[in-house]
Amino acid sequence: MKRKRILIFSIVLVLIVATLLTTALLIYSPLRYRAKLYDYCNDWIEPTFYMTDLADEPFIITDEGVFHAVFIDSPFKVNFDKEMVVVYMDITSAPSSRGYYLKKIEIEGDTATVYFKSDKMPWDKRKGSVRPWERCMVVKMKKLDVSTVVFTEM
Image 1 (cartoon, rainbow, N blue to C red):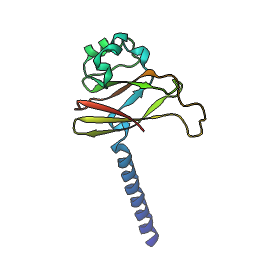
Image 2: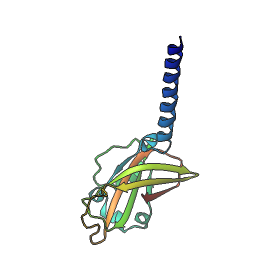
Image 3: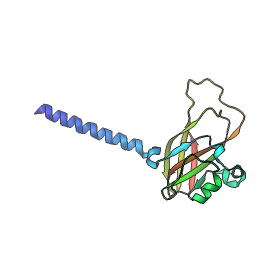
Image 4: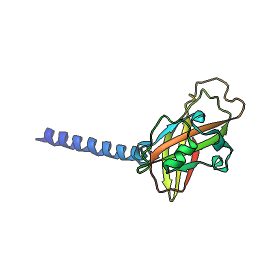
């Protein structure tokens, strides 16, 4: 009888810990917002878009017409009833061979903060910079009620 109680207690404890860990991981996880970051998307963007004031800040696209005006070639489809796209352009000196990936997204008020990280490993001894160039990243995600998106490298 005592062994049975210990087994039941252990199972319940494992389930509680697993639930807490899963909840903690999903709070800021990109999975929560069905988000995917596409890196080095320069060839997908209409060249005249680079010259507009819209390219200076992350640009939220929630309309199919605007999407087709900004993108000349996109490998993904967007359901604008449920999803949105954010275009972010940055002047960087990171080598183009070094990609970025999405770490987490935080929402505070009407601002979403997208945290991304370089895939450079600590043991990577290659030179860390090249001549500055414009790098375009695109995040496709669940439609959010935000008016501002901020990109932050971790």
